[in-house]
Length: 92
Image (cartoon, rainbow, N blue to C red; front, side):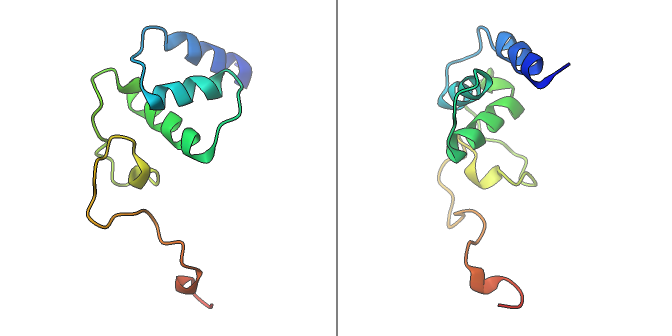
């Protein structure tokens, strides 16, 4: 199955799925529209979390590289995501 066919099948499978911001981002991508980095992250979370059909619950997969940006994670104490400070990169 080609990528376009996969996207069309996934979009069709979302029929009746809850309307959340994250699921809307996934739909936008599947329709071939441009997405921002944030929208791509939210869309992937919706895909992984079965479109949030069981409600807007946070992910418990802390091993996922997108976990710090999970849409329903709620407030976290000091967890702002991976460091972007280049001075922490070895050899700099």
